[in-house]
Image (tube, rainbow, N blue to C red; front, side, top):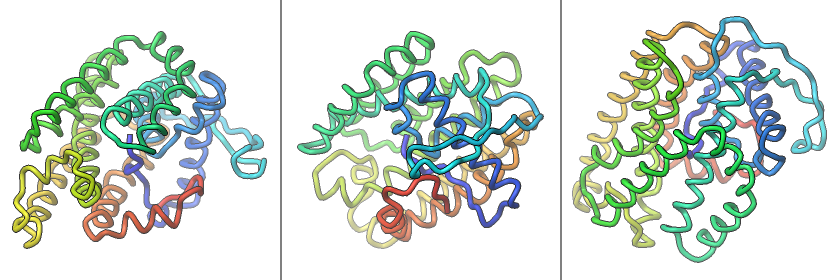
Length: 296
């Protein structure tokens, strides 16, 4: 996962901001408790979003103040986890480990070494999570293999590659039943497709410079990238995915985090997309590097 799924705090009430932060901290603590302290370093906004989607029940979870080792042991308010959050924690570890494995395959030099080291550090957490959710682990493995095959043959189909990644995220709905599963699958699929396209656009210049595969570089000519044709078409298809994810969300039953999810879908995704297209996203991440709990 990539950290693109963020809320816009300025569009939240103070109560909603506190709720979001409590979920962020609650998932962090849950990952550490279930899969070891090293797994807490894997946390990002995408996984918090996943935890909010998987959570069932409208009642606000209990909160407790705990010292956080990542902010000089200041006391932070975190929500008490339940089985839904523990599931989100496990899926987050699995997704992260496979992303590291994919980095070892695709990246060069330092990034390849960093990915290999991360795999070693999180291996125990991954084995524990994969043992708890073998079907999801298998689905991610198959999806990564399909994506690698598309990359190897330099596929110029944006839809084909985005669909492959979207189906990986969609498999997180496994274990759900009935209409909830259908709606959650649709939402995760379209958010996954949005994430893939956002990442492809964000990494385009870097990938071109390094010679790494990027579907946008294959699909669009230099002229289409320069005259804005690529960005215009990409904006349309990303907006379409966001709208379909929003439509699916409106069919879901409200839960304790619905306000945060709604903020992310209707304000966060458009804001991130705008920052990516303008080039501001990279600058913003450089400024926020090393700072936890930051939002838009």
